[in-house]
Image (cartoon, rainbow, N blue to C red; front, side, top):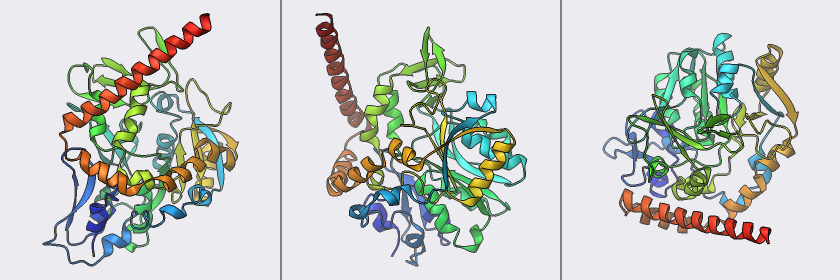
Length: 403
């Protein structure tokens, strides 16, 4: 038995856990030709069917537990919740929300609590940016790792290169942290000391970036995508955290603004299949979890942004208290129920139970039979139609109001 049954059923999240654990080097990470879905590929000439990859895989039970998903399972064990932000002005200015992940890693490095950190990084590229995992050994590269990548990254694969370090922090979405937690049961991964989780509604296949760029005239040269740029003014228009648009920019700072409506519309067409039935939105196996503070009205800065902070272990509580005492962060306690409501936990339960998995699989495989350009064109055509209908409705509503 091996991981092939997971990939064949489109349940692979591309986390990289199996890639790390296979001592026979029979597993590599590849992308599908059309959608760019990251998955684990098996070399059957090297595989011995030892089953260790299946034992460590975070996706093994996700389908069979689909109908059993409960609210309490998604919330998990929570010690405390906060809304807050970094007090480092440079980090905050470059952050997508409250800058908490970067500030936590900075604190851990400066206080010699870790000597390595694993997270994702987006590099300038053409025609789209390059996304990959990054291993940092000091604070120098933290700024480059700020902001969300959204598309799949095999973060856990990085652990092939971290055995020399004494204390490693891993930043990841739920499938990454689940995989890391499974690996921590083995002695060779006992150097993983901090699991820093991100709230994750879903991740996207690589083609998502091409779709975002479709139909626009991008800046010259290699570009970067800032999916939610906050608190800035462009061509006399101010964009707040609440209305943060997607920004395509080159190294010279030339940019193109993409309407937030386009980013939101495209999500469902490029979501990784497994994400449709994944219950672990709030990253239940992490020590500390960071995300956007949606739903916590009047408790976060709608103009400049903040982060929701969920502490799941005593280690996390101690870390938060130490950082607060040292004036590195500003925090406001909020209730678990407020966070659950803001993160639409009940909706998540409903969506998973209603998901027709077989239909999703068939649709995805059908899309993989198209060309990349044809699939994107079909999706963009739908987006433009919906946008036109929305504008017409808005105009008619305005006319009716004037009467």
